[in-house]
View 1 (cartoon, rainbow, N blue to C red):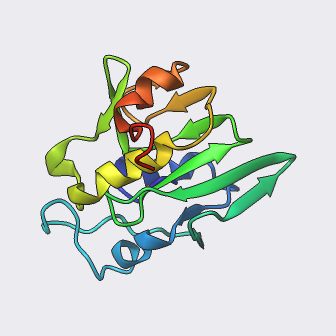
View 2: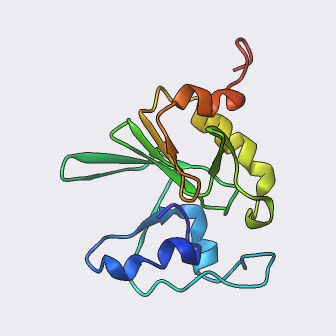
View 3: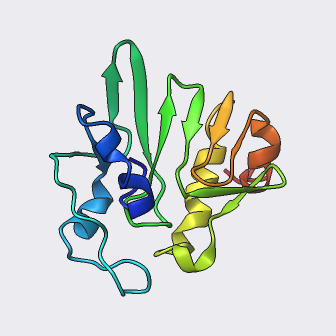
Length: 156
């Protein structure tokens, strides 16, 4: 799971045998030590065991490699996943607008000030064949999508 908002964990019942992985920064939300949505609500309680992934952790299953990339901003533990070093799933870290990566929608982000660094971090990845967001679609044009987040030459 990229994060623990109800629109993301709400479908877990359809996958009763699936192992659940979340970014380590989500634990405070899951343990109800922090509230969500302007401090008004808690995230749903997960009824099943889950494992927390640190930045850079890799999970392998059936010959597929999934690397966790901490991309805080939408939530403290928002995590993007790079699958087989080719497909990037960003959850709500990114909203594609006209094919260009932008931060998600303001009031939905808990730590919006952290999002630019998360997007810049993703932009430093090597070529990605497919970038998928949770709500605003996918693109195969990695260069165009991430161009605004790349540091000019000499600034890295």
